[in-house]
Length: 380
Image: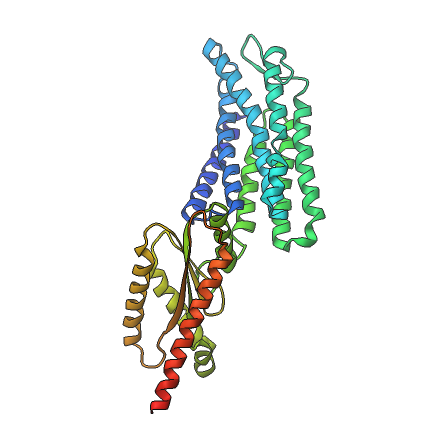
């Protein structure tokens, strides 16, 4: 067996997972619970890939320190597996049912870890899982294959769960979750029967990439036209802030007379206005804010309560940029109405309540503008 080749597979997977971990962080998508779970799977998979290499690196070396390290890394390797599988199962469960309470009741599928931890302690005295002989050579114990089997049972259970729930899932999500579960199962079976083949945890890394590409990246996280966050992402972010009892402000924007723009100049011109307004809005909001298009001509900004002047400064900058833009336009000028609402920490107010407040204030501003227009017409 050429272990250098096996190490290379682990190293390539490590690099790939590190890039994926950084991508989730840079895109600021790890506020989503599904992304957090996936990020935890990535983190522990990176750890176990390193531990797997180290568990082989000291095998057979005739030195006292090598035997201690050999046993330590093999024990860590044994205990890390059920943690990843538990997180893995939690991700699949959450993608199926979208319920944190359900995962809490199932203890995030960490029952296997408790079992493995108990066996790990017993193994110190009995060697039923693995042993290190006098020549510092690793040998599987009689119970190891049963441990493999317990992991496979959980993965098969997740496959069955996904299949039975497929009518409630989007086709792409169903396929990605199914593949996500199937790849580690195949890799684990191969590693169980071909001792020394380092493929199981590399296959988990591949499964994570598949899950991210087909589930996390294709879930319409961005609006196609404006490239701002979609309503789904904004809603999930608001739910997270509310569940964490954080203070936040909402600013709801709606373009004035947008229907008339579409009717008079066509939808292509209307799309152009939406794109320009989204760019101006993006230039106006601070980096820590979340900005999304939640309707045809409705935009939402979510800002954590960092500084009370942030909202005022944002609006001042937006008005200034809009004014500058309109000065260069002959026909269509951008006008907007807005509403602002805030939820304080510890306040018994839901995100929906704050949104409704913003909506009412926004339409109140529209009514005031329409009243002014009517008075202008009468004077003429």
